[in-house]
Amino acid sequence: MELFLQQVFNGVMLGSTYAIVALGLTMVYGILHVPNFAHGHMYMLGAYVCFFLITIFGFAYWPALALSAIVLALGGVVLEFLVFKPVRDAGGITPFIASLGALIILENAVIVLWGPEGHRIPNPYPGIIEVMGITMSTQRLLVIGGAFLMILLLQLFIKKTTLGSTIEAVAQNKEGATLVGINVNFVSSLTFAISTALAAIAACMVAPIFMISPSMGALVGMKAFVIVILGGMGSIPGAIVGGMILGLIEAIGGGYFSAAYKDAFGFGALVLILAIKPTGLFGKEIKGR
Image 1 (tube, rainbow, N blue to C red):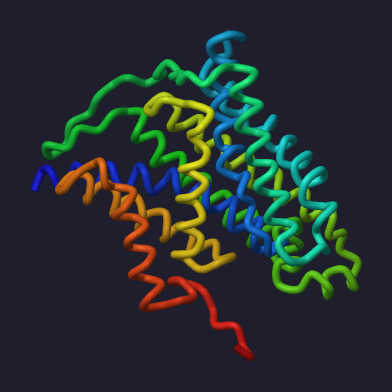
Image 2: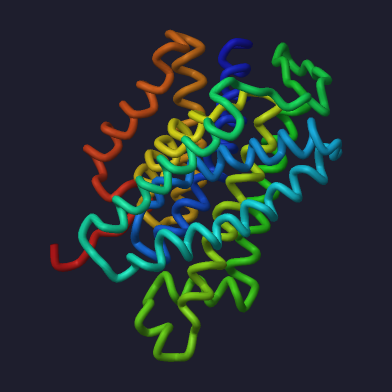
């Protein structure tokens, strides 16, 4: 029983991180209807910015996290302007190719600038808490608490503010939003800024736990897509639930069977869920098909 509870705790921690990353990805898809394959690498850049702010410039952990989110928000605006805006109306596979190109450039730029070796951010909260036989590090508890806080703030922003309502309007009907005077270009840039800021926050929270490297974005980005598909393309509640499902499956499968195959368990769950509900857990059927 203790092993099960330990893996559930680990799964909730992983799922919380995945959910934050997937939230940004599903927001971008909801606006542009194009998967951002470079999203995982913006997550990776967030970890590197946080690492250098702490180790080279001497920032404390929380100011480094906040500044990393700001830097990556600006980076998201630049990414949208340079990569996605020019091909927004191109159709076909052009936006996909542009996104893949951005992914390759970002990863190789980090390798050229800072090398392929891994780094670790010093753990600001190395304490350990034991409850009912479950070993919980303070940093992992902060990841869970921070994730739920980010989810709550994002929901309040979307549902209770004018900017949030504007984002929802563009996601529901871009042409209609344009006709009533909404600046779609501004909304698109704002969505990218929020998306990459969330990715940076997630990266900074888990960087003291896991090693950071130029290749870390590829796997996280792929898992974010799994979560978005599991939850339903463009669904914010689906991204949250999908992240938790994937984290729990990985942790429990890795704990009881083999950690070497934990990623296979997650992708296997994707196949099973889509076989039962092809639109994902919260996805809607498209009329006329």
